[in-house]
Image (tube, rainbow, N blue to C red; front, side):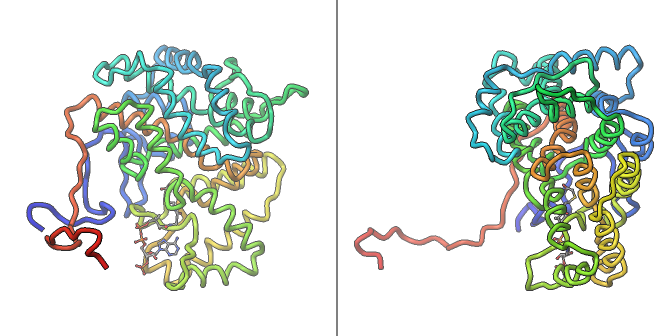
Length: 391
Ligand code: CMC
């Protein structure tokens, strides 16, 4: 292979050095900037975690207040963004809207796009974090046929998103604090995960010097796939298809059948060969949220039965396939009233923080353009044949 190695899917290639997120897949450990995910999930807020990922340290109260003010200041979108969204077909997938609209932000802020200027980079990062929930909620409201909602800046980040999603002009809408807390937790757990497919995409696009809106739009597109962030939507569709606990065994068998493309969605991970620590936290939160909201969801029983059977099955044990972050998250989103088609957009809101943190880190350090090689397997040299002599 000459001077390079063949590594399909980059399972053995470190593409960068990073100070941001640490994963030990064998032990099931995840830390942001050194802090265990369990501690952040228990004690922190999404916006504080965003600060930590972006700047490397937990903020003092003054730093947090200033950051909160900055993010809040940028939550509005230009009215023309709403016009852009209204041009989509009513049932466009929210991820299609999100990637298109985020890419278009470069057209709105083209005067502040010098990627070599640290201040402009910081401003773009804050704009992306602040506006992503506004755009995602607008995509949902477009589907519902509701007028766009302005961000209510007296609310906190996750409350504000729920308010933009569900408030309708004719009724008073009070954000349920249990729902806002649960959402904040899910955003924390999705905030970063080192060099996953979408983050690697952001870095690769960023390595060309492209602007952060283009990089993030590319990240959103990569996240959409069912092997990545699209899995949360696929899990709920799968649980609905399985339908009842007595059907679980049949689907586990189907997932093992190598002639059947069906996989257990929300199971397995490239890096975790142990429990995904995020899944453990979300499973517990699922019970608490359903209890607190006074809801019961038969899909949770179904999911737990699926987990139980799969974890006792040699196929899953030998391959070290455990539930991942996407396995239980959809049950919480559903309990909050978020429709299945929005699940991956929810992931994108949380992950935006990781994308922009990684983009900032890369942009602030010397780097080369990302340019993988290949193993050529095509034809050897041959002579051109004029069209009339081809058969
Ligand atoms: N159901 C059944 N078999 C599976 C599954 C599954 N969910 N996942 C992996 N396998 C099998 C696979 O068939 C292969 O078997 P064999 O060695 O006999 O060929 C073996 O396990 C290794 O799988 P792989 O596809 O080589 O592993 P990978 O590291 O390339 O893929 C994955 C990781 C997450 C894409 C994969 O496990 C998968 O497709 N899972 C379902 C989709 C999913 O839940 N994705 C969310 C990932 S976590 C959050 C995120 O990234 O967004």
